[in-house]
Image 1 (spheres, rainbow, N blue to C red):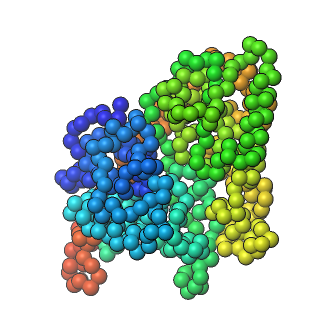
Image 2 (image 1 turned 135 degrees about the vertical axis):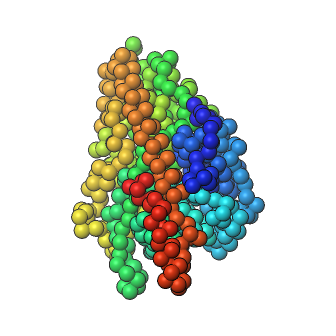
Image 3 (image 1 turned 180 degrees about the vertical axis):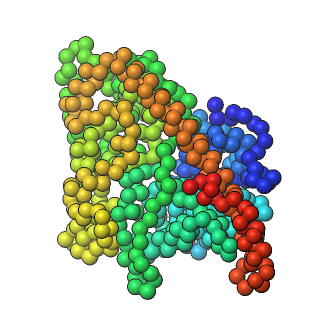
Length: 477
């Protein structure tokens, strides 16, 4: 279980580690970070600072809500900030300066070095950077779950420069040294989203700003600690076609409607006694709980893009045998659903006649291409295809053929292999996050380091103190 052992709190130098979790929407930290940290440190002193709760800005799973409820706070400093569907912010009513001022007040109260050991931010990344600027002495662990500039109220080129300048300053400086600030670590969960930041260089407006650069961070495997349900096969006559995520939904497009109609038509033509019926979650009036989903014969998942945070990882956690589109099918769908305004669109790379000017250029070791070839290339980096044990289909007809050909004992054997993989992934993630928290907590604070301008004797003393303290890099590579 998640509550587990309730022994002494983790500490560093006889000082309890205190973590302040922050993200917009709040489920960026409750669903993905709080549970994993409590796995490793069940008695961790933790606070979750949230924008006003309600609507989309609430923990999304009932299974996790009871666990995180004692840690949730709604700071008065954030009460006046209006969100849009859980995301920051309502820019028709707010200015960026309003958000900065509110975060400054929050940092002064909750992130003072004497009170807080570690800031854990679930994103978007620009919001993490803005909050950390108000409390630069506190180590920050940023877990980037979405586009780094999501909803940042600046023109595209300006906001990219704004973020990359701060990313380089905070995450690109290496281990702390005398006179430097505490270390920050950037963790990203999705290879495809991370690759876009690696593969493209954005041109600086001023050539004297420095060299153009690209960046990436540590990689993490998603865990879903709030899901306790496991595959059970109680509804052996039904396969469940789960709902896709909210990013560029395939089912809402015209071609998506036609594809699903064709699938239902083909399923109706199957002879009596065939494998099973297909239950479409998109046609259900109410949300289906996880234990009920896990009872079905198998799951089918068809997203519109090659990256996502929830559904596929939830199915993997339930050890649910899953049918998933092959790369050759998914990259063609992604090519259809991504519009020219999407940050991963080729329109910013000179791929459209009406936008010939490229805002970014590919790194020298990447291919530069447009159209379907571009999506096929990036699909090779999709995290969806890192996991084994999924069954891939190229068409509606092959999907139905797989449903009919796969027997119950084979599906159960597949589920057992998925459970074994999940246990290894969980052990690796618990160690990864535990080492990361201890490494950041061990970083010397600004107060322990003599600032530039002090006497040579004081700087020598600070170097000796710094040398006596273990570096974060010795605990976390």
